Image (cartoon, rainbow, N blue to C red; front, side):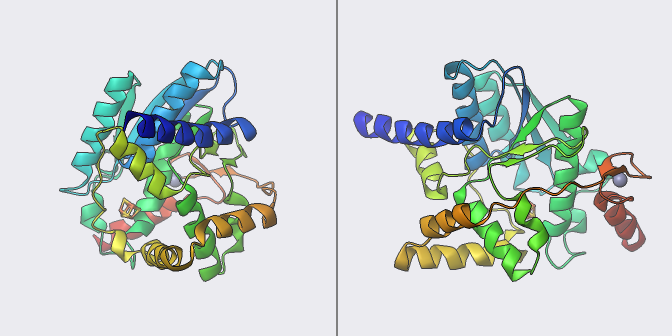
Length: 283
Ligand code: SF4
Ligand code: ZN
């Protein structure tokens, strides 16, 4: 049993370290902010980067941030898991909440849009960048795994949204000094292996499903892909085709400051402030 566990852990580590090394995701003296929700993907990212810092010979700093959207009966458990894992690895954790920033929880606005993930995504991306920028971090590491990438890839077709193509890949480069680049160390790791890693190592994680996830296109795409995987084994093939075909460079974009909050944005007011104005009129 121990041999099986060691073998599996070596496979996971090799997969993640290869992504980190091949794409040079982390460089000497950088400060990396890990976005930790408390779920399996972000917790594995936390543990892998901790090990990478110990074993790679690259000297870099680690911090973590957990975004509290305000989802009663759900997010509290994620925060507990984030706190416990960060404490075990001695990684400083910051908690930033929608309530502190906008004075309402996601629960208060969950039915204002067709999918709750829309306002949640806008606010979460905003806070993640704001906290990471204010902590002078060089990069944000997220727990996106191979399945997430394939789902996002298919979703861009479903939405006819080719503007998102340059956002695929293990690194989203810096386009402004206040827009913190994103890295995805689990980019090549299938989601099922992330789950197995947590179980075989008995890692405390938050493994509930967000109550609002069923409102999203992603949730249906995920079910569809899992069904295809079960019947035909397609995920790795889609990912490989995608890696070979899509090498679209990120475009140079001119960024400005939001007139309302001062954060960097493609167009002022930023999406978060635009949405906040809309919500204020409805609430
Ligand atoms: Fe937010 Fe949707 Fe994720 Fe829930 S599933 S945390 S609403 S993005
Ligand atoms: Zn703004």
